[in-house]
Image 1 (spheres, helix red, strand yellow):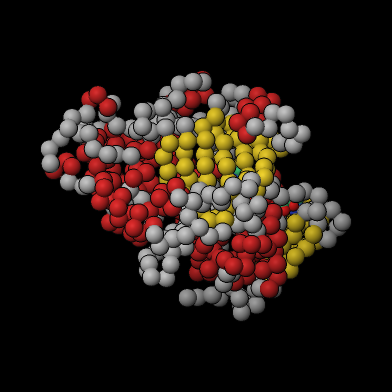
Image 2 (cartoon, rainbow, N blue to C red):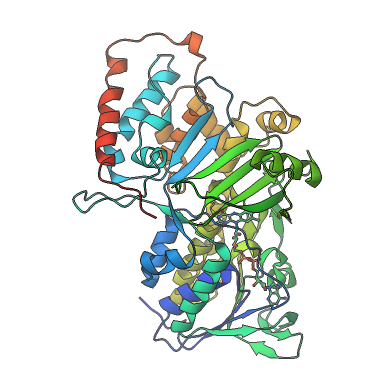
Length: 496
Ligand SMILES: Cc1cc2nc3c(=O)[nH]c(=O)nc-3n(C[C@H](O)[C@H](O)[C@H](O)COP(=O)(O)OP(=O)(O)OC[C@H]3O[C@@H](n4cnc5c(N)ncnc54)[C@H](O)[C@@H]3O)c2cc1C
């Protein structure tokens, strides 16, 4: 591979939240030995957002790439294992009030086809088991509160993510970045100096320090300070993602440690429960168009049994959408500065990682060119839009009718053509995997995830419409599948 474009470059990352430190580590590691100088500046006055405590399996790849062992970082960040997300109360269909979105595991190869088949047959009107919770190993592990670490005699790959204390993760990654030679600066950037060619030449701190660099990484969070200077247009997702606010609180817990995130539907949004080894993180994500912050906090406190508690809840605003371009000339936006899709599937750090990796790959091939940046922007945007579609699907197929919020979501026809085709394929009883492949979107959310979502909400003909079906329709025996999963499960134990 040609690394010549990165050779000897000065890189300045502005912002020391999780995005800034992930970018610092990935860049310093990837361009080690090329004389690349990586510095990160963060403001002592402007804090980090301090939420974002659930990941996808991508984070394991990030840690593995950096050579960071779980035994080292997990205790330092009070981290726990995550095998997926449980969605409680999003559907009112009988038998479907809860379902689990599992991360994939290799033994699923034996059971997923049975689920896809059954969900297909049920959509044709035959009464076979179509609830996703019966078919996946990760679901079983979550139900049994088991960590996804099998014994040595179980040689199958199990994908998993983590829950962690986001402030502690930032500190940990800052220390690791120092071992890779990253310079850590503090100061608040007040001014941005432009070069005549339209590049950023330097940033200037409040106390008058001028920091020049070849490449600037904007990790300033929702402020998107450098991108604002470059007049990068922002596309809002408000037409189909209504949530723009959150209220959060931490609570102690002393029960068994869950290996799943729980997402519980509320009156005007949903509430997460994220289990860390020493506490739970909780947050209610809601739409301010449908309820006030005070109303949301009251409902949140009631759900957590905190109505009479002195504990303070923190309120946050969310800027939901994305930049039109994430790489402009010598500046790349990473993290909340490049956009945010609400945290229902905990995808933000996944996007950080993918963005930085894609930038490294593109840049080292030949630096900034209009076409290279355009290709990069197109691929980051495709990922954003694919995740957006999957999240929007949750809202669109919900069957709650208790509040205007849920009714407005279920009746919202402002969905993308891509999502429209996915839903049409499912509802008309056609092959969903084929449609995802046709659209080339199964690389973002695999067919298993889409099947789990649509089946998990009970998007099937009504029970009274279902027929018994012939022998062929019942070719998979649920007892055999459950027996197989249970026996796989014997290889796992409860590990923190
Ligand atoms: C309610 C909510 C829930 C979330 N849940 C999840 C989740 O479960 N999983 C997930 O992956 N993500 C989640 N996220 C997203 C996640 O929190 C962020 O992606 C992640 O924390 C990275 O944030 P950041 O580093 O981009 O920004 P920030 O944490 O806001 O950091 C910004 C940095 O920029 C610096 N800065 C700003 N202005 C200046 C300046 N002028 N000069 C110098 N420095 C400056 C600040 O000092 C700070 O260091 C959630 C977000 C929200 C809002």
